[in-house]
Image 1: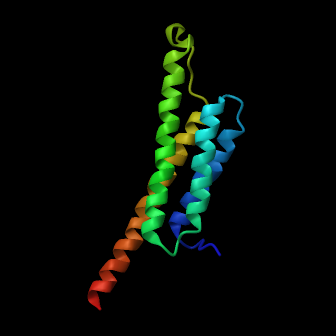
Image 2: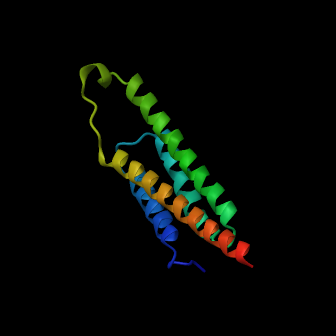
Length: 126
């Protein structure tokens, strides 16, 4: 069962959707597709960990780590390409979707942390 009323669940789902859409765009190579797929799978799995907030925060950070790997691979591809000298490199929708999913993962992490802090403050009152 998924708790859709939590805002971080929606952020995690939107991040996974952005990553899945970016996988099927023609402008990516196999390494970028792999990093995007891993981040999408981890984001979707993270939705179902709502009962264990500490683990959910760690898994959300792992998904963000996969996006950092994606960014490093993208930078390596751009620098090693011949298009760098010619100035032919342009931003495409795949890059925007991956960066948008990174933003969504960051918002999800902040929401999970807020819930965890709220539960801890309620436990102190008992």
